[in-house]
Length: 602
Image 1 (cartoon, rainbow, N blue to C red):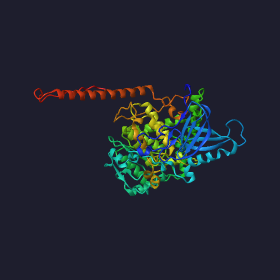
Image 2 (image 1 turned 135 degrees about the vertical axis):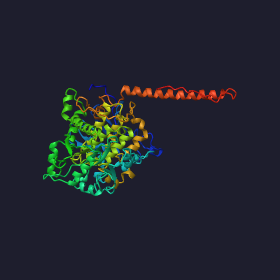
Image 3 (image 1 turned 120 degrees about the vertical axis):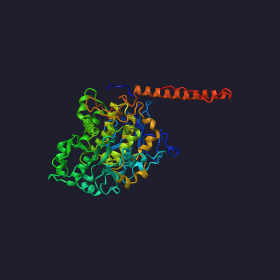
Image 4 (image 1 turned 90 degrees about the vertical axis):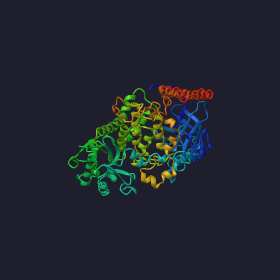
């Protein structure tokens, strides 16, 4: 990682400004220094402060706090230094130093963020000068801990498209040629009575009755029964997802559950149903002590159980902490490779990708699979969605990827609120974990290995992660669909997809080549995986990043040039056609006379 000259420091997440395509009403914004405020955003406090920039030393300036963001702009230097940080990104706020602290800039605040950076500000020591700003940041960064609403419920942004309409379950199932003679749609969960963390519309084996489903639910953790995620149109193999069976230490069996898994197997005549348990074997055995467990060979004789050795949420949380330590604020050049290896981050990425490849390969070869972890909302979502991305080119389009996230992550109850901690001051909560970030990293690895297979670009992935934390949109709020319904998220907040789809040109990969039947098998080898520098180290101005690759930039220029030539060609053809029509007379024209248009291949 070679050093580069320090550029003007600008720390703002991608997609943090208002879209140029928002409605006119949305664009009535008040000035906030030199940044346009969002509709519904209100200024709370301004304060002179010193930003202790880890790259440009201490910088005097002014900080503005609104109900949505922290914005800092320097006042004492020609080189611009700005920070634009959504308050939702803040994980915790700490006081730095005390009234008797000695040393320059030793008294102030330290802000630890969820997006791989920390911010330090210094204030004058006299008169408790930090008390007001500390209390305001703490209050607005953690609104739920203070009986206040998340910003998404206060925002008044408006877009032409209603992003909540991107995913319609029945429309997506019909695209997969469902229901059919093997699989049916059930509305047994329409009031979330069967499973409060599942969506209302489920696809289950045609031969399974609703009463069967209730009996199976009693034997699955959190009542998360095996349901269909994806159907292979050619060989009719399926990906189904669920939670662990409640086997317990005594090795309990449930004939209804065993029969139900057999119905999944029989639906397309699979000889052996493959059950992919995302956990390491030892963890699955340990879960028996708390009433969980796995499908034993004696009970599920027509099934094959495969453990994928992916570690739990706590291991992933610690791994990301280690990664942050080596990338922010400084990258240690001399021991970079050994430091990166010690975090085990890429090792975890490899295991997740490897598991998804096994799922995709099994389904592609005509065998149906069941995927689960403990509760079926973390590692399960990673595996099913990545396998579907490998198998189905629709999910590799800009729109299809939005559908994939809405379906496998949001509707099926990945616990976003618990894993991210939106608006919650309890930063040490053991439920916090970067499971979704890890999934997006896996997607990025695939886009690097297959640069022409995805319609969307890296910018989309970064924008999704920025707004995973920002609380500007309702898309990632709450733990499940039932909680979003009871809080009327669709009615009271804007979807991230309304923002993204208001200017799709920002997120299009110019190298995209549609290939409808191609299955992608990325290489899940440490030699082929990379650290996503343009995400994890993007705050460091010494690392040349967020610059479009020269090839991509040149390709875009050529596409623009092509469009110009095509437009000019059209004008010439129109001019030529008009000229010939006007110069011809009734005496010279013949019935067969026509103008041959020039066809130029591009």
